[in-house]
Length: 201
Image (tube, rainbow, N blue to C red; front, side, top):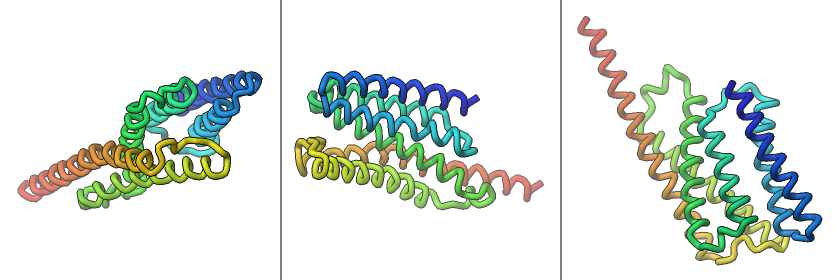
């Protein structure tokens, strides 16, 4: 069921961006048509994963990802909400949180179930925060490269814009990383209590 929903939702977003691409291209608006191409590529990521992989999808994360794309690519770049100033910072904060949730889901898939109760909460915290921060860094590299090679103006505020974005990414990731560390610590405590009860019985 999750896979079908991912296919449907991703296909809707990709189709929406395809329509926008042809519309803005016919209107001669190169910037918006370029953003639409980016939307097609980003929206196709979960679509292609659903088609070509056997991953079990975390539906809330996929939905959050698509909602973020709508907020950043459509409302932010195409509609022009990034001109409000605070919208860009807000989107980066949300993206940091989404990436951190994705890191938690990835960690739970990669770590063996028998080993997970003994993993250090600090390690989970650092992995989650680092994953979210890396996502922010990669995005800033994309913006810088687009400005340098495609003549775009994604980093309109220069170094100040970049640093505010990275701090926002880290802030969103930090909140979820703290939650993930506490959650892991509680799981470890619960597991130890179960073992202690078994030994006493």
